Amino acid sequence: MQPVLSLDNVSYAYHNLKSETPALSEISFQVREGEFLAIAGPSGCGKSTLLSIIAGLLKPEKGSLTFGSASTIGYMLQHDHLFEWRTIYQNVILGLELNKAITKENTDYVLQLLKDYGLYSFRDKKPSELSGGMRQRAALIRTMAIKPDLLLLDEPFSALDFQTRLTVSADIGNIIRSTGKTAILITHDLSEAITLADRVLVLSKRPATIKHELPIHFEIDRTSPLAIRATPIYQTYFNLLWKELSDDLSENEIT
Image 1 (cartoon, rainbow, N blue to C red):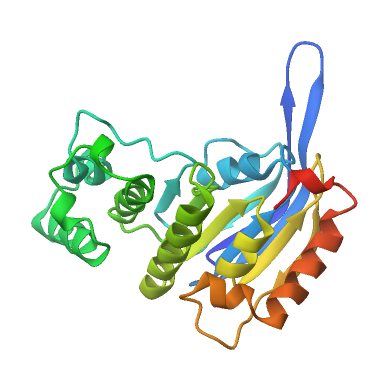
Image 2: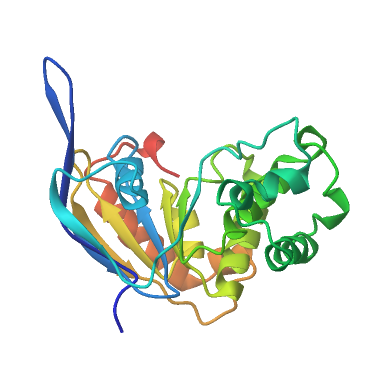
């Protein structure tokens, strides 16, 4: 089966009049259909640059990207970016409006997503009336509304407090798995990467290269992040990933 996405020796650098700052160096990997891939690495190593290249917001200076079955990409950012002057329903159909895809089939799909993820009764509320976790669910529904083949998640839980982050990341992970979506998560949080992903790629400090690739498998159900973190294999995964990152990080740079 053709991969949803393939990167082949992708490199990128930022330029100004005085200097060049290399961000990525010869990044190569593939993403399979239905896979949840996490990409972890130290702050400033180029994770978000990589996601911007995949999203088409930046063009690689070297190397290439090949998309297989991924014709539509959804991008969920670090902040929800919900518009206060629009209701939750009006916010989650924004992508459909921009793509001129407001049809009964699509709006029925959005309403079902709102019901499935506990936001239907809040559909006429404004964003300020919702908690941070509910706003992130709304942001995901807005992303899912266009029925993307590939979901890009750029540290979408980083603005939440620890307890909310734990709950919302589990909810969103379960939503993505239940719908069979292919997803790439950018994170600096090893626990988050292990809990959510089928596979973790570890990037080096800038210019980023792929230092390590770790498949993730748990025998128990993934609906409870606390149950996952209590398993011996979780600690094994954490130690392996920590070892890969410890050369580039001080302890206060990663959680």
